[in-house]
Amino acid sequence: MPDAVVIGAGPNGLVAANLLAAAGWSVEVLEAQSEPGGAVRSDRAVHPDYVSDLFSAFYPLAAASPVLAGLDLQKDGLEWSRAPRVLAHPLPDGRCAVLEREARKTAKGLDAFAAGDGASWLDLYDTWARLGPDILRALFTPFPPVRATVRLAARLRAAGGLRLARTMILPVRRLGEEEFRGEGARLLLAGNALHADLGPEAAGSGGFGWLMSMLGQTYGFPVPVGGAGALTSALVRRLERHGGVVRCGERVDEVVVRAGRAVGVRTASGESVPASRAVLADVSAPALYGQLVDARFLPGQLLRDMRRFQWDFATFKVDWALNGPAPWTAGEASTAGTVHLADGVDGLTRFAAQIATGQVPDRPFLLFGQMTAADATRSPAGTESAWAYTHVPHRIKGDAGEDGLTGRWDRGDQEAMADRIEHEIERWAPGFRSRVISRRILAPPTIESLDANLQGGAINGGTAAAHQQLVFRPTPGTGRPETPVKNLFLASASAHPGGGVHGAPGANAARAAPRAGSLRNLHALKLPWSARAGETTK
Image (cartoon, rainbow, N blue to C red; front, side, top):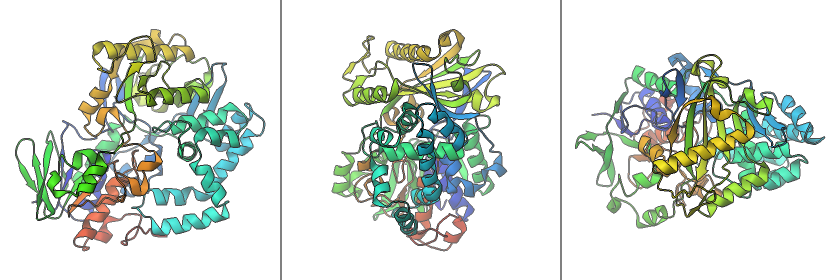
């Protein structure tokens, strides 16, 4: 009988399993799909000579994460690579806003949009340099992060206190208008805010856009050499070195509860897998509460709150094998790993408003990934392994474009939406379509079929909006991995601190499991915080 059963072999499940196994627990990970990784996988299905990442691709949060750093995955074969430039946002007039790998180079480029914007960017970067370590410590620590918050509050006072706090909760449009005269820096901030589901007018989108921009400025947007799956492979190898087991093709249908305590799971094949100490669930909160755990074991208020749980935007993605680099009109975009495509901040607002009103955007905001530019192993020399994704509503009321998209996502819908994306890219890179050797379409239902946590193509484990963060994640009054069922822990992106590949939800659950029972092996977990709830070491 294993000490712990982990449901799901996504990055959070594998991080949790690694930490417990290294502490001497016997751990068994059960994964529904035929391979581990969750949203961190790659393959050669688009073209045999091209490596394509199925879901996530760039990992600034992984690079910043003390959780992943503590696992020392380089010992298990993980290598990182970066594109010459972090991010580019071309404009219709041929100019291009660029997030360079050095802050002063970024600033110099932004001065071309408006004199003085470079200095304003460096001011934001200096604020990050002072506060960033404490922000990350608070972000990756179980809620409430007591010591991290005390230190951060002290530094906030020194850095401007309430004025700076106000800046962080601003909508990103307003933040850009207050800090910059030109469009370049405003676009970098607003585009990065939309890496989540935060449009330019959303409260807190300024803080999120600033965070993502500064992560990129500090760590770049790194990628695993050889594909996203290399990160998963390193996690699995490390787990197996410590005696852990990963079993794929084993869908868990039930968490077995006796006397208010999780004692194991039951799989779709009918197998009972007991757990003597804990069950950790790297599944979405809606899947755990009322599906895997029978409703009779849960408080009625929790079930009522779960009916208000909000998913982040649905996602539509296309992968390509290109016979040459994308022919960008703005040459700076050719050496950036990530390219944002939208007609300015107004275009981003229009895009977010169409989604909010249930319309498929006619000019979708695109995140375009140039994987060979970031990692030369992804495709033959002179070619490009590329992808782009955009967001669409979960419930589609109509099509803002002319294709009559219905939201059924049948073959007709999928091909029309993929063509719309390619036509949009052609606006910025004329001749792009002539370079396509093959493409793969991942519509929202397809994405969900490949990872049940990505409900309807939602990739963040639930909205990143303020009303479902911190103590409100996944429901009001939670914010921690513990659940109403003893020895059962939520270890997915639905838990604090949310989406992104950083391992914090899994680590928080692994830290909570021994505290809930025996503390015998707690110090062996080697986490970057102390044994007491919410406290970090110096």
